[in-house]
Length: 297
Image (cartoon, rainbow, N blue to C red; front, top):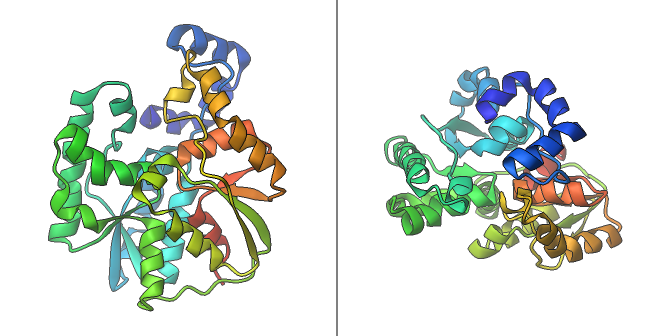
């Protein structure tokens, strides 16, 4: 869908925002008409990266980036922010030779065979990056990270075990480098009161601490840690007509907590949590990497 939509993003975004179109999607595809659909970017992250490839290759230290569908088709700016942060640390960013969707939407909807085909392509690319190029792999999505590390071998029978520990959430990898004093990151004061929401896959991995500690490194940031509660969207679950009321009911305590927190914005490592929070509250929601990029001195 992203490949087809990005060349016509302004038209697609305007069309899917129209009430008659949303009603049609409700009837034909059972996507609830109340659900705001994600917006597509005009141009992909990979297209932007082509102009950056030579510069990225000039760095002595490198990481490989599994960007996922969200960064590539919906929010290339997050990928650009990641490149800016790593470059500020003296590290270049490479892409995988081939990348498919991590497969979570397919897994969640029972299309296991197709998910396995995509996982096989990704696993080969991950092995090439780690074993042949000697690169660690980072991802900005907590969902993609969990899927590559844990769901591929356990649900799809696609083995990523030998390289599992070389697949990292970007915030965790950056935190480790800073803690080891192997890299530095100069940050300017950014006076903001922010609330961090822990995504369910992030909680499963136990890696929330790393994003929190990175955010605490930004001078001027006042951090509010929200109670551990599911936002209710659960990937594609909350888009479906039959699930929409339950999705919003599950997320209601979180939405109330956000509205009462008095924060300037919400921060999370999950793209679907971002969509749900922005649709269901009055607050913008950003990724920790984006805040780091904005605070670069």
